[in-house]
Image 1 (cartoon, rainbow over the protein chains, first blue to last red):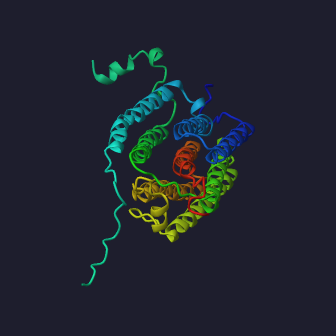
Image 2: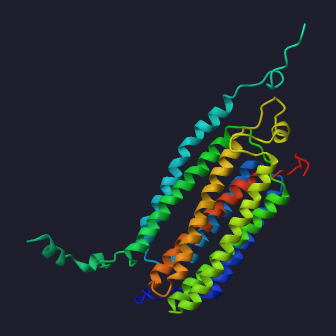
Image 3: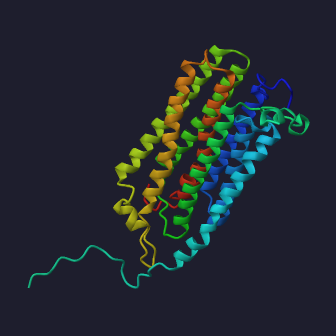
Length: 118
Length: 226
């Protein structure tokens, strides 16, 4: 970070175009993966991994955070990551309630049959 | 000794930032803090969606055309709008206000294209019968499990809430950028950069919404006969 930071916007247009190309390529990989048969866990991990890479590219280069002071980065990034991870505390309950669902033993409920005339 | 006098003795070497510890203006810091809080809003919504998805029989109804084609083109529009926004901020840093305005208008064009395409995509689903708390009848039939468990009608609620809130952010961003483009000659460079931060954030959120909502709900085996 140089001292004359105020009017200085680091990064060349060539760099930004190459970041854009990376983002488009990663998106195309995601669309390609959509039509591959694989377990939902692996698919979710790969897709989230790609999304985090894309988000990091956008934040670092487009939002310019890579060229900001380290103090700004350590103030806003770690606490956001920790807060988001804390939200995962709900998932055990989600998996539990999935096992509690009412099991239909016969046909699923449909509209009540019309009353037959005698 | 008064507080002000003591502040004057503050060891500037340790602090090393003077009145600007982050070396950004207070408005830019404010936008970063807003972005952090808005990230948590979207994280909470997406994790709520994941919670419901993991505990329910979730329908996967999106056909290649129109849903995936439309959402992919929309992703391309947003990514391109981010690129033009960077060019705008770059031009503004060089003092080229006319260039900045031109690139911001290009950004608005891509942003508006995103909203229009998204509304058309919504209309496809609404026409098929999807509502926030109801599935179309044929979806309910096709996605019922072998043990008779019907698919959850919350699909529509999560879909419209998350994509709707994101679309609202894009629409708000368009108004924000319009104001910045109109007043660009009076604004400081940092104000243009701040509007760029907001716009890139809207793009960033879509990088999570697109794979989690669209890519993971593809009708891969053509269950709906598309």
